[in-house]
Image (cartoon, rainbow, N blue to C red; front, side, top):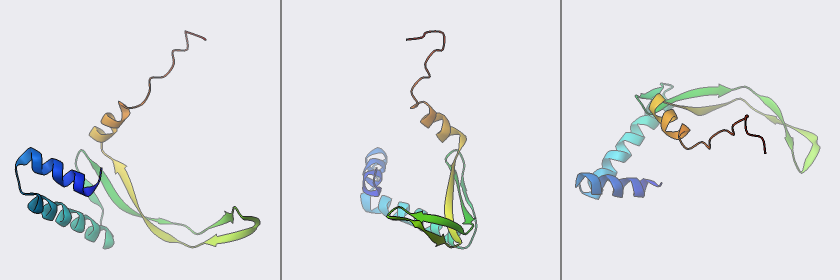
Length: 104
């Protein structure tokens, strides 16, 4: 789903003008990005939590030249942890585990 798809869906469900919906969504995304840029975590109840994590420096490998070590510096990344309701909805997509009592 793209931002455009989201705007169209919300606009159709609410009857609001697409430009207004786009403006609201963009302001929300800007607010999330702004908070993360200042080091604050963003918690959206029942959806999830966005937070900043610092990755430690490490040594990597170049697949084209495996004998050469590549130094990967410290960097900051955004981490997302889904909320309870999202985890439950996504978990329903998992295929069922095979029953160990019935062997092929």
